[in-house]
Amino acid sequence: MSAARENPSTADTRDPRRTLEADLCIHIFTASAALVGVCLTVIGLLQVVTAATKAATIGDDLLAADATLFMLSCLLAYWALRSRNSRRMHRIERVADAIFLAGLLLMTAVCGVITWAIL
Image (tube, rainbow, N blue to C red; front, side, top):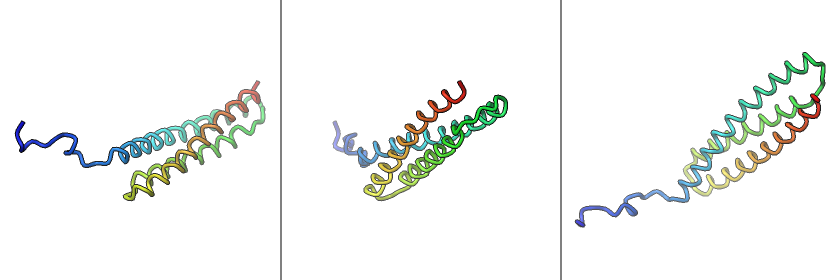
């Protein structure tokens, strides 16, 4: 092996931990953006169903709050991706992750509310 060749492990100067955190932020960003769209779609569908069946439900109000949580998570994940400071990125990512999980829990609760209100 010639001395001019670089060792592949030393050629990449990126921090692997920062890469993993960026990957997590990208997943939170894309999933939460998609779930905002899902919430808005279901709100529209609920409006049609409640107009046709006259069944009142708080599902659309809860989904609006859920969409807000997912949008906040999306914005925080984007901010973490744009952050140059690794420590700040990690803190913002943890907050985005917690809000994303809260949104998922609320979405699960909304599914139960919608199911039992329409039956």
